[in-house]
Length: 437
Ligand code: LLP
Image (cartoon, rainbow, N blue to C red; front, side, top):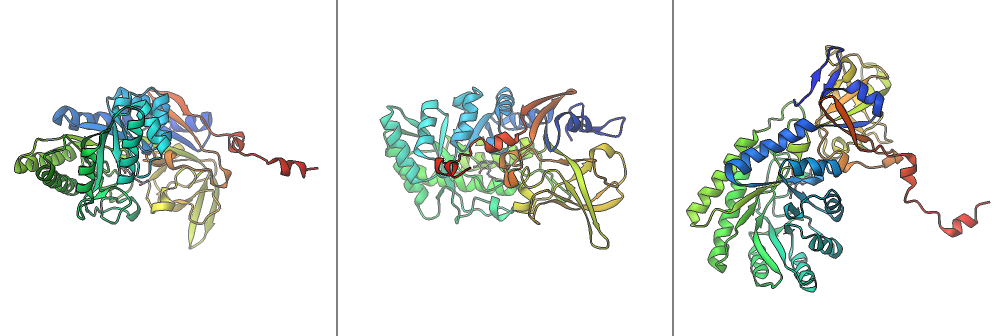
């Protein structure tokens, strides 16, 4: 996919860059982001939703964010969904247009809300009544008003991993429609002096393939909008349907085209609006994984290879759950190839182990690869989303560098962490210093 090919040396090439050379120039583990594919994915959404249906697309920053990524998102005309002061700060530092920023989160702090009010973000996606009251009060103190979309729980079970589904009633996110909380929230927001309520939001989960789930969610939201309109006379002018479109990681995953997703969702919204005699709201979607995921590849160097005859062959790489916690957290599957033997046929089935001190630190179980030897470069694909953004320093492993590749150029967009970086926030209290002879 994207600009991935095999070059004349039989090496995997991304963005016109030989990945084996990338590994030797920048070291491993290395996150490689295919600029062209990232942009193409943005454009696919822009065309399908914005050009065709006048809908707004906001990139879910939680999947992959740094200053350079902010630039790409801005250039491609998307907005941004941020979920914390840190993500907001990153967008601010990148001079991302704040009117296109939507601020999510189920427990925003007063300081985060203040920062967002000062920055004048486009929308506050308010998750609960506590936040609503705090935001109204803060906006009042700052002599301003907050533009708000209320997050609701539509009561929909999507087929995905337990940890990444969010639409069901028993969820930490949003106001429940069924028990009247959502209606109470809307009424309260409408009577507040410093809140301007624009619309409603739901997000049913992530890595979802059934488009019906989205149509269903859109329908439930529009039915609720009709109820609200009857009760209050107010109708949402915006409807945010969250993110979640699934991508291909490994065999069995069957992603749906973005254009189809857009058409299905928009049809459902329009039909329901018509049926209820409501204006068609401006639709917003928040894709993350389906934009950044396929654009990322992680390069590792193979180290220890341990064969347990008749049992399993373990191939250990120089990264693992520190740079990609997804297999350990969600039993996520990935595909990989040996970058320096990209054209060679598969010869054996091996399992790829990380280097953390945990048996659960396995990147891939049972993958067919050409004979793997120490020093080989392993390329794991589709690591653009929720990898770097969920990376950690467990075992005091420095986080990898990230390069942006395009047309044979590779530019560092995140420096590799150093051992010194690991100590940056460490402090030895005076009393421990004294005890030191
Ligand atoms: N909007 C909201 C409100 C969300 O909660 C999320 C993801 C998105 C949009 C973007 O969803 P996407 O298009 O990326 O599926 N760490 C997990 C996924 C957590 C999803 C969090 N919310 C993983 O690695 O699978």
